[in-house]
Image (cartoon, rainbow, N blue to C red):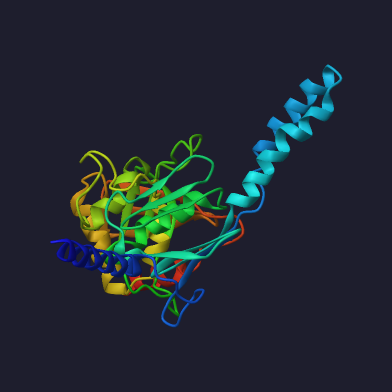
Length: 315
């Protein structure tokens, strides 16, 4: 009986080792051939947001003649920050973390299920799958968490930067009536995505729901149905940026899927569109009795805008 128990324990240990090797397998530093490097960063010192706190505490201590106390109070904090920080690389296939001290570790994005990516306080990104990883005090933490949430999903596998890039122009726009200048005091109300065959308008109110709308669940969701599958905020602008890494047909399919999932979104076919430049920096798109209005950058048109408009003229 004892020998059987030992044999069973040995088999379980071997199985666990193989599973961990899938999710946490030390590979060469990225990018490997076939990978696309999405983001990298190196956290060394606390955010500048901590500087006013240090200055205020020093002022309080100095006012009572004890300014020297600031050094022993904050030195351990800065030492802890440096020791717990590190460098990260995110590719289209994996997340690698090299702490300041210790061995590098990585997680394959394909091993992550719903609810296993979250954004904590102080730019801390947490990944919880078959293995866990906590990246503390990382620069661009919100962007890193958003990219992990996007690229762990099957719809964003095998991405690559393409030359020439897809014809896709995201523009911050207002929804208004033809010929009417909208109230611009509060900023644009949504993001319009101009494609050769159509334009999609995405109100900012649905930003947090958009990624879940165009992707299928992976595993058992750990979040209530009314919440995002990951505890990460993914703005539409970041999602549209990553869509440009996909093949043309997949871009169109996912955008049309988003429109079907959310009635707040608007899709206008290019053949039914009229457009005009009201000035050198104002573009108006008209569809029947509705219009989209954009204030273009003063330094020039966005890349590929003229090519998209040329494609519309040909329809």
